[in-house]
Amino acid sequence: MLLSVNYSNSLRGGLAPVARFVSVIVPAYNASATIERTLRSIMVQTYAHLEIIVVDDGSNDHTAAIVERVGREDPRIILLRQPNEGVAAARNLGVAHANGEFIAPIDADDIWHARKIEKQIAVMEKGGDRIGLVYCYSRLIDEHDVVTPQEGRQDKARGDVYALLILSNFVGNGSSPLIRRTYLQEVGGYDSSLRARGAQGCEDWGVSLSIAERWEIELVPEYLVGYRIAAGNMSRNHVTMARSWEIVIADAQRGHPELPLKLIRWARGNFYRWLSSGCVGRGQIWWSLYYLAIALGYDPSETCSLRLVRDYLTRMVNPRIEGLRIARFVFRIRDLLWLRRPSSSILGMKYLEVDPKVNDVVQVRPREICRQSIARSLTVLSDTVLVEGPRSTKPKA
Image 1: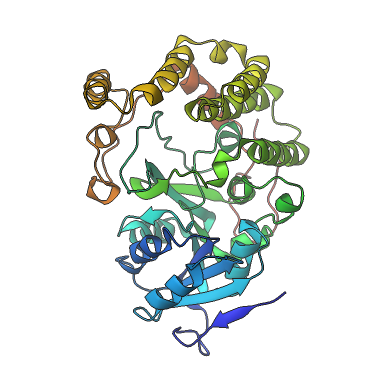
Image 2: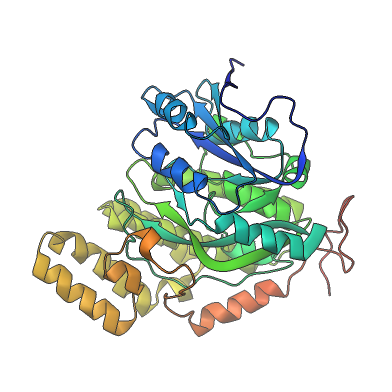
């Protein structure tokens, strides 16, 4: 592997691993439009005992030059280079060069609230070695860092949540978690083989599942990540995302055949409804109907709900009136009165202007609460939480 490391502006010379030291891993591919904003959101973290490892994954734009320029302002920034091998390989390379006790991944187009690492470290220290991963809530942002409309309630999932994580990826995205480095290495890191199979997209979910299978997961119930929705996002490549999801869920089923089939059906329904919703919002109507048909086959009761019909009509109509200012104003007032959208997105506020403690999303419906309760009752950790050695994968009675 070709590797170029910029040590001239780093703190790494002979540095031994330090307790409570955090290694921030930033995989970057042609990220010149956003990488500086990402880096500056890391540089202003109130928890300053960290290093910032940027892995340039074969970019052919000015990503590396921007990182080097910003790095002259902050000696904690380290630049690694590799040929284009995908986000999983880039993250694994960063982890391999990390000195920290904890790994904090962030995509090169996302931003953090200034207190993200501080709050997650506090939860890690309080929970002790039984905690393998701490996540937080995320807000969707556009290319200008403005919070965009989003629906759905953030789950308060803690503890032994493997089955609940199968039902839906409540961790949310790859910029949310703080992970113990030794635990991440023990589960094998990020699955770089997905790229070779044309199935990038669910590497983060796969890592979260592997951690949840052996250790507990904790939460900082605040919106500490600005997750950018842009045309280049991998999550928008629905074909590879679907292939990636199916590979990860198949691995989970092989590892835990005791999980009830209804849980897997519900999980598939959730995923393909999400995929269908994303397609209709981008005008890919036929793909949307295709994924909706798959969701209907696995989870007909939820897929036929009036809520889903309403959401589809809204997503189809909104793009056609978004150029009309008066129409946008009316829709925002309607959404505010119906409590269908977060107030921050209705008012068009930038992510860093929004109170991270405000949980302003819609409530969960009774059927979803019931399903989550069933998933929470399915456990994979043993009664005595161990720090080292293999864990029992037999569910409690």
